[in-house]
Length: 181
Length: 257
Image (cartoon, rainbow over all chains, first blue to last red; front, top):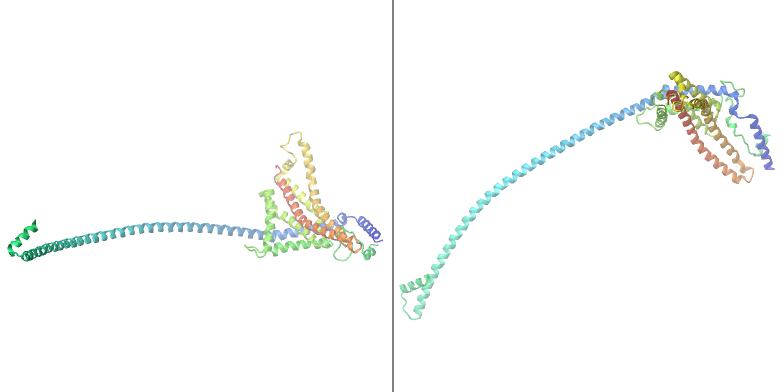
C-alpha cells in the first residue's frame, strides 16, 4: 500500500513539474531577471571602479614602494657593514704590524741588556778566578814550606834518635838537596 | 492531492522548484521591475562585494588584515589572469572582467546556502553575461582593427585551398562561443543543485519504508559529496567564465594570433 501511494505521488509530482516546465525556460520572467542583472552589474562595477580597485591598487603600490625602499636601505646598510668590516680588518692588520715592531724592539733591548750583563759577569768571573788561582798558589807555596820545615824537623829528630849528633845546618842542607831531587 | 500525500509522509520530488522566480512582496504577475527573489539574491551578492572590497579594505593597511588580504588575493588573481592571457594592453578592461568574475563567484557561493536561490542557474542571466562579453568583444575588435579583425577567421598559415573551409568553421565556432559560454555556467550550476535536491528528496525514505535504512544514509552521504563537488564547481565555473572572457578579449585585441 505504502509503495503504491509513493509511486502515485512520484508520478503526480513528475506530472506537475512537467506541466510547469523548467523555470529557466519561463520567458515571462526574463525581462525581470535581465533588468536586475544589469542593475547588479552596474552597481558592482561602480563600487569596484570608484572605491575598491583604486584603493587596492594604491595599497599594492605603496607596499611595493615600501619594499623597494626597505630593500634599498638594507643594501645600503650592507655596504656600510662591508666598509666597517674592511676598516676593522685594516686596523687589525696595522695593530698586528705595530705589535710585531714593538716585540722586535723589546727583544733587541733585552738582548742588549743581556749582552751587557753577560759581559760584566764574565769580567767578574775572570777576576774571581784569577784571585782564586793566586790564593791556590799561595796555599801551595805555604804547603811546600811547611813540608820542608816538617822534613827538616823530622830528619833532625831521626838523626838524634839514631844517636847521631844533629848538625842543624848540614841536616837542613841534606833535606833541601833531597827535596830538590 | 499533493497536500494529502505530504501529510501521509510520501516522498516529494520537486528538484526544479528551487529555481522558481516569485515576487518578494505579495502575489501577481512579474513585471520587469518587480522585486523578486532574483533581486534579493543579486542584492546579497552586491552586499558581499561591498563587505569584502569596501569594508574589508577600509584599513588600507600596508600589512593587510585577513579580509583585506583576501580582497587583494582576488584582485591579484584576476589581474594576473587578465595580464597573462590578454597581454599588457588588456589590463584596462580588468574592471569589467573583475565585475563579471565577482558577480558569478558570489552568486555561485550564495546559491550553495541551503534554501537559497541561485541566480547563475538561470539561462537568462548567464546568456546576458555571455552575449554581453561576445558583443563587447566583437565590437571592440572591429573598433580597434576595422576589417583586419576578420583576419581572425582567415588562417594565413593554412594552405590556400583549405582557407575558406577553415574560415567557415572558425566563423561557426565564433558564433557558438556565447552559447557555450552561457550554457556551460547555467547548466553546471543547475544540474548540481537539481541532483542535490533529488538526493534530498530520497533522504526521508526511512520514515515511510524499511528500505530507508539503506537509502537514507546513502542519500545523506551523496548530498554531502555532491555539496563538496558543488563548492569546487562554484569556483571553477567562475574561473572558467572569466578566463574564457580573457581569451575572447585577446582575440579582439590581437586578431593576428
